[in-house]
Image 1: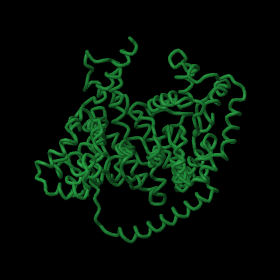
Image 2: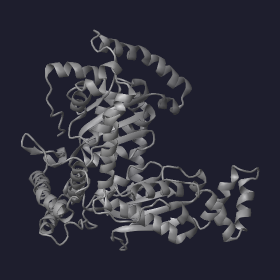
Image 3: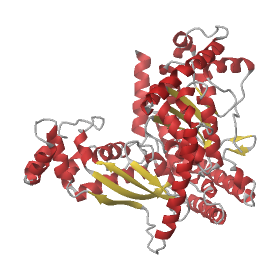
Image 4: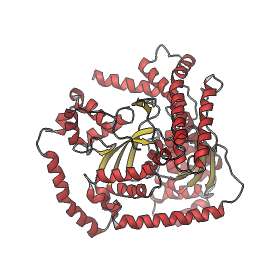
Length: 547
């Protein structure tokens, strides 16, 4: 069962919202009639708010005229029949766009139209499936470190009641286990907050607001492992038509009911604002029917060959990061590519030349490509893309969620399960809270093992975020540099900071000459990692207020 909008609006508010969203009741809707500046600011606030996007729009923008200047930016909101006129204009233009799409037959045409879409009250598992498609779209998701997930609506915790499970013999086991996990999460927040507050008391010179925010982030980072994959979250996505068409194709053929429903709703809502760009993803369209036949046949073939080729006993289950593949000639390839655009020699000749160079001269070439960088935001030359690496990672689902969003890389994960152990935050280890934390996770594993014997895909919804998942990254040195320098920063979660640090270390061990490209990887440990960033944010706010 999908939980539709649980926020209530007055008749006046609904009338206002109708102008700016395509649906005032569904949990999937598209923004419209809003300038990019407002949409960007709205989505930015969205990830750190417990409010739905519509309530946030009313509270922070429409009602906040003194600061947001909403009316001045948007223009006249009282014009009669404007919505009807817009709908008529879209319909009138649809044939024109259809002729262009059919006439040119170029999928890149679909990138000329874009839309912001909000997808609310979907599971953490669904959010990852939506974010699997990364090129052409920009997702944003409610944060588990800024927002408490212990709320109840009508006396019930907010987790997805999966229809197959809810009509099976596992109904009570599923709901009772999810409720138990949320109860434990809620119950541990106060004592853990007091414990960390006592262990890391506020510096008298530190901002109270910054300290409170950092403390909350620390507590929620520790306890997020108790949240099951069924936990409901909110998402915002901006994407072009090509991105949405491909995404909806994939959602329609997914075997999970929730994903199919999201695909249908996305298609319905996007058809109201950009019908020409996503029309081929309609279930009745011949393009989608052909995609379905291709996808199902391919999945059947892969399942068959996988069953024949995985009947062996070797099985690595240890958590951690492993560099499993790289090109031994990576250094000379990067060096040759660095020289290429600055001369009139062929890449073939440059590769031959660089293979003959001593290490000292190769180091000089590499140094020229990185010595001037002053911070991690200064991008390295594309020559670094000639070095490729494959990592296999076993880490908790929370870490995977944070790293999964990186775009310029290839990645694949296995089904969520409880077979690879789970993560216990060091702040909890050895304390009176550890026993209750672990008991909840072991109970969830028992429930998962029972359900997974018959329903392995649906059983994923009950897996807590603390349990490890296996995935791989295949990426080049330039993408790896960005990932490691960004995700090792002091403000990051310690779990993904460790993965980023390990990836940089392992490449540097194999290729010491590449260590220079990781100059902004932060290998330090931090107790309240968010404190510095929260203090800087408050300082900026105070500076703006004084101007």
